[in-house]
Length: 293
Image (cartoon, rainbow, N blue to C red; front, side):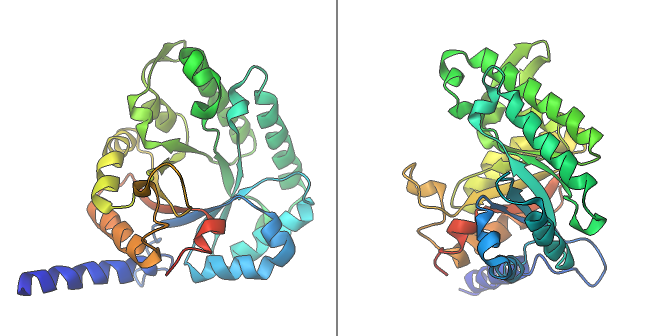
């Protein structure tokens, strides 16, 4: 009984520490990344204060914000400036499966052109801190019918993005499913598994490790953590909070936030000694706002 009580107390202390992960430590060390996706920027068009308050309340220190060219740049500048004032880094988010289609890269070109115009017209406090791509090529029709060509197109897209991001002097990150370590490639980019190539050719990845227990999450990200260690890169572990028809183990929608924080604290404790482990990301603001306590 004493052993069980001690384990429970330890787990609770981990959860408490994790819930405050966004706060700077007394030693001055930078806290682990605690990120989220903001897919609907119209939320801060309608109520910037409410969105910022939510991010601050959840101790977020990094947010991936969808770029919608219908929203005025000055609206983004206001949000980015206010986020920075709260210690939150803001990365420009965009991407779609169709980007890997023939000439689909033109969508990426539009993003990079928009960002170039945005950055050149902004003060430093309003500048984006990086670029975050969520392309998901496996949802493109060619993934099943022309897998090799689609994988190569995805690699070409990321290579072009790396060039553009370097010109903008911004780091490039990408979302990636944990199972990319099972996808082989052999083409003009060489040969290997797609997960390792993406990690090697970006500045950081956020793994879509969509499972609802610490043991499962720890297991499915271990290969990518090892790959990131090899290349001196960083991995953020992402989890899901939205309702899905893909199965109950995918999301924390049923269990709620307290249980999620406990599981993520265990993941953080497990990988705390690995330099490649950077932190966690919670998908996404919209569903997280309605997640039960």
